[in-house]
Image (tube, rainbow, N blue to C red):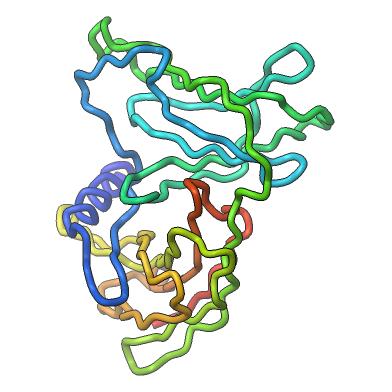
Length: 256
């Protein structure tokens, strides 16, 4: 049932389309954007990816995604290659296209050497269900991480203030360094008509780069389970294809 609910929520959320307003554009992040089932890409250029350091131990990879595959990130260290531990991962809409943002730890297991190169590999899940022409393994090119200075910093949240019974004003500090996108992340109850249930879901809303506040409606339906009523808000920024550190997010929440 949980997988059915998640799939239904993603489908219903995406069916809302792009919600345009003077404040920006909203869309639901897909849990697993799928590629065409009959597509048989070549190994050399299947995964489009780029990488950058976040700090001494952590790296961010922004890549394309095909839900048929399970992915991992490896790093070249001291003449060998090892898989890197995932710290955080999420779907982010970058310049109108959904990308998978993965952050990995190169120091896990008391490793001290920094990788000189990263690579993303995807392994086809349930290969018995696919035609032999579908690649069982796909890869990105070798990725030389850019400097940590390319990772943008998200502004801190300031407050979530109630304006009325069902409206709040979400406020944050001004974004620095002229990002390409400022994204309000909103986690709230979402109703799936397919399964007839309310369930927490995270939405991404583009706001004006210079904006520092936005008013949002609260979901207050009496059928929402008490444990799922919380609304939470935080800010992400995107610049030159990279996303602010996923680990640094500090949501502010409110009960309707």
